[in-house]
Length: 620
Image 1 (cartoon, one colour):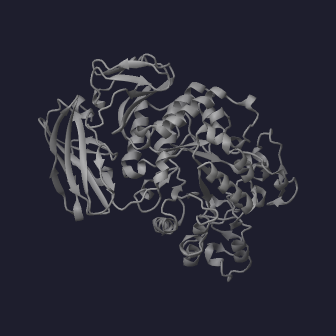
Image 2: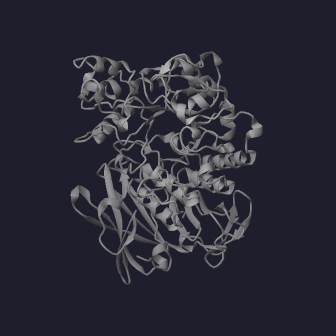
């Protein structure tokens, strides 16, 4: 429905300004709702459903502050998960307001706001900027461990050693090696610290015959060509010295055909590890990842496999969290497929089991899952802390800025750039489907080892790269830079997106790196970006704008893909009064809110701005 001006001003999210809660079961939470001072509203109620029965709790009118009226109420939190929404009684009838927006009809519970009790979020994540590294392509710290051409066969093909300045070849993609290793990463941490990075996410480093290591041969040893256990210990110590975190990539959905588990099972159908796999006809017909025969799928109906992988005291996923390696979390490959095969749908059971094991070992570990589709069912507080937020963040930006489709052959693909309203709608849908506590730690990215690079996606338009980077660092969640994006590295799909990091600085886009460095510092220092809420303010024409708001700070982010003639932006519904002085952080330009609007005439035809309210009443 088309919203009235006062309806647009109604706002709540789970951030500290709108929800005050200790997080402990049994404690009382304070709920706050903001709306326009002149909204024709004479009553607001909090709707919850304790023990399955609807409960309506009245909120108090706390009066007008500036251009906003605030409503407030309290509620003891007696359940581990409390769904809630607001009932608004206006002069012309009632409305319901939930995370999915405003409706005149009685909505389903699916888009309710949610508060989780006794949910332990990894506290360090909210202040973090991640940097993803494909280990073979970042830096060669020890040439003596490099793969040599012809040293072994990769499924019948001799492996190939490439020069650092060569581009990857699609025909030989998995079995060409450049020599990057863990020692090289350790030696380049000063570069990352200067950029402002505080955590690394590495693609798999366990022993495997390919360069990408998703065909695991041994989950208990680090590949010697990447530096082995010695290299990981060196990196761990170097990261400690730089006060940086480390998340490793694990592949529990499948292993490689050279893994001893599979070799034994294929040789003997009665081998102890044969239950780890599903043979349709032994020995050559078996379930594999997407039909790729080199990646046999693991069968989680096997309790013994679960014990070895995550549940047992000495399980693989527990081992690497312990000293001396002390990794800070796991990225779970193809988390959407784990434990699922036809009628066997054990995905949530395995997800809950992994969480229990990982958090028992290290409560502050970050549990991240790969998911290219709708990962929200796994983000309800019992499984993952986050997913790689492709659908909820990345893909809408690609389609808005570049008209880019990840899988252009699929029926849903449309090469035309999407409308700005569509971006906002998709963002809202994926935020609304999960608790705010989890939305605020979602893993946001502009690309990865599986996708083209952002500069290539937007057709080498550096202005659009800057727009994308600004959105990455200002949207709720945790930003991750794919190595080399900060210096303008290009690359189409795999393996071109895995080019070696160029360390010849003459090949860098230094202006882009400086801009990204500025955004990193902003993200790590701004309360509004670290723990603030989110309000969509505008999404029409070529321009999108939103507010990030914390008790200590208010920011307005404006992004535009091309000139649509918009010179002022309506922002009264953000709670900003006329006369409020605003400063654009990236350029220092200042303006004053007038007639409920923000002057954005200084915004380039394609560009982004981050406006900060100069004076902030933290007692609001």
